[in-house]
Image (tube, helix red, strand yellow):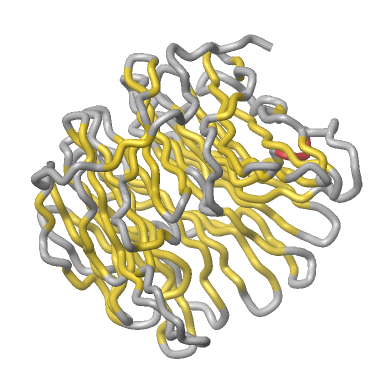
Length: 435
């Protein structure tokens, strides 16, 4: 296996705390996009035209429907993406390209069966959705839906089909205005011994060229590992799934929760969580068609939140992880990993996070956090929770600011325009900002 050697040490040897700076981004007042009952977490995608599209699953009386709303010089009226059905519309995801076209995927949970539905948005309207996979009730479920679309109108939708007998990771590609037949990716992996291996935490990254990368964790009851498969734009098929992490025996710990980023230069970085004597972050890089030997990205004990990684087309990267009730950020510039910094608000315990990075080396991190309150009460009330946003520009992190009672998703384009989705009660809200 070809090794990729980083310049500079990646081990966390010192921690730098964020010094308060003037905010580099001005956030607008939140605008209400929708008020009512929505299921799952709404998803946003943005393009370089300063447009954005949001998708969510909405309950209307006793039925559900996938709906979207477009931002183009302001938020437009929301429109239906799917017909109303009597059961559930689940896990909707959307991707928007620089032509203003979008593709979406969701699970239709009907009366007798579930189906994977895909649809295309063009000329201001959604086309009729198409079913790509049918699963009768009692024969499995769908999870980890995701989707991506580039300016060449090439895209992919993925889903994990889970059942009591097996887990199968599937991909359905969109090319030349047509959806291809859905295919199995994980079934090619035949060297994982053990009965009934389970697949979890699938992550997709597609670059602007149309190269695609998938990572996931797999556990067979005795051993865990991280698996990857890729498909380059000029390839006919997905690569055979490959182990990119150490193989860890269940008695020694667990490897899980990967995240991956893939840029236009064919460079990818994957990170994951390692539970062993210490909880650490593992990492591997993909370059020239080969995965490097895995390394350890932290020396400190890390927390339970899934790490994230972002990579731009300058080959600059950033990873975020959770430890000591704080969020830490570490960036890679010109092949060298800088010292880690604490970027979260002191006195608040993060519950999750999302990271996005553009080619201007601007980054936005959103996270929800609960206030840390010392009390002697035997049954204290739940502490208040709020959504925060931290921004990175000109090589520095700004102090995080509270932006919503709950943050849901974030988008950032090459113009430095950012969108944050938030929730307040039954209201889905959006806040815009610009570096």
